[in-house]
Image (cartoon, rainbow, N blue to C red; front, side, top):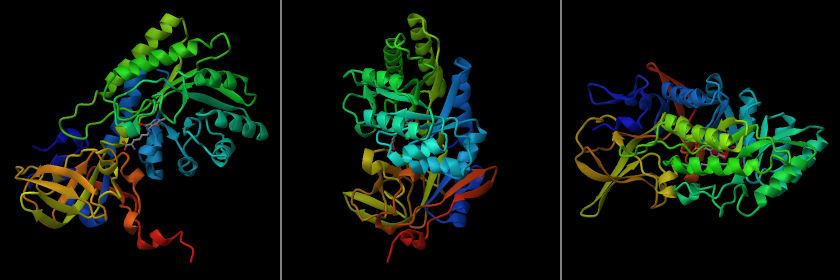
Length: 435
Ligand code: LLP
């Protein structure tokens, strides 16, 4: 059975058994742009933006939704997200530069990161970005000084670490005590940071942020953390902390495999807003504006990677390796997080599975396997394979390992496709080398 739930909204299988995305046949996309190619479905992207904005605003009208650029960004997408009313979460001077170049509004840009450099903070100040999310005592000092030198007052949030485990991969768990991110509430650092933020001459402390990890399939960690951080904030009311903005970050899960059922956006919204409302009522505190930062849940489900099969190696009684023309260079997630994906034979999308195979990449690493022991129809060299739910953290974490060019990105809608990033050339790979 075709795993519809992990594919973009417009995905279907045509009468010839071929995968169609945004009205474009997978084989036509492969012919036009080559393989591997990352296909993004515009309708899914826009629908996901709308669902975050609508579901949260339904319950709390003063909600800002910022797209977490780290999931993947480029200028065409930045424009699209702005059209949909999203702000942006950036984590480097590079992401900020992309936002600036794309001419999106910088008022709802939040600059995150545990070790922003002096240069990055200066760039943020020069460009008058809306918000810096301060993550360390070092940064608080530095930003206060740089803002003073620039004659500016910078609005900030402080990132606190609530010490709550969201039960996801250890590499993507952030809100616990043993984490490089944020000021721990438990150790007293968060309290000191709030006092320092309130005292800083050139900083305007307007709220708190936390981010628990990603992807988070449970609602309870959000509920517990929202309650805990609001209670923490209330302790500083008398000292002058006005919680105007409150940001529980991102981390909203998506389905990677057919058996996964992430909570709908409405359930995350309900968990966060109802806890916030109840706790604020209890504390007799005004409701702050809410800032949420989905990345994966916006672009993940919209993206499908299409590869072409080359070599097939059968080790009888052991394993059958089916190699494709991409791999860990465009999708490091299986190697890094043991992430699992569905694999569909794009030209045989509704055929019965017949054999167990392992999908290998083309990189010089034995660990370069995109999917292990998956059931697929009989495959031949030249067939196309599609990996869904590949829009987030695949192209953005891509590398040029083995001097392989990174794949193109194509936006599809209503039977038309548009290249939004071309494939890298060999010349691109040598562009920065100095001979
Ligand atoms: N806000 C902050 C402060 C974050 O650190 C992150 C993700 C997000 C928002 C967005 O989270 P999302 O909604 O996309 O789950 N490379 C990993 C994911 C790392 C996430 C880092 N921070 C992966 O491939 O699973």
